[in-house]
Image 1 (cartoon, rainbow, N blue to C red):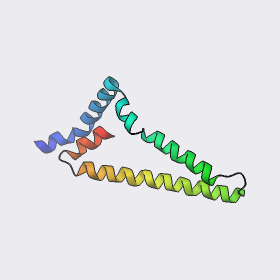
Image 2 (image 1 turned 30 degrees about the vertical axis):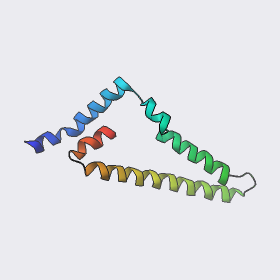
Image 3 (image 1 turned 90 degrees about the vertical axis):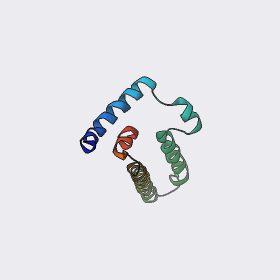
Image 4 (image 1 turned 30 degrees about the horizontal axis):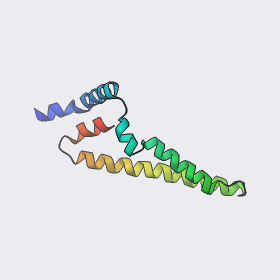
Length: 102
């Protein structure tokens, strides 16, 4: 019976997450302490833009820097997401927690 209940954990967690988001919205108090992940990515891109996309550099150098930045961002997002998923799935009812966080 518990295994059958877990089959419904992801859809139920998704509905729960949608309900909480509709009711509460973004956690403003949390974002005062820790910026939203999209804002952090934006800050990183702005920093990289200033440091690696100088007008004095050649076009090929600027292109290579852009490709490297893209690789770093995608790989970083993948690794952070994989770590969060691994940690949540290690918890009891991990699929439920993963669905709520997502």
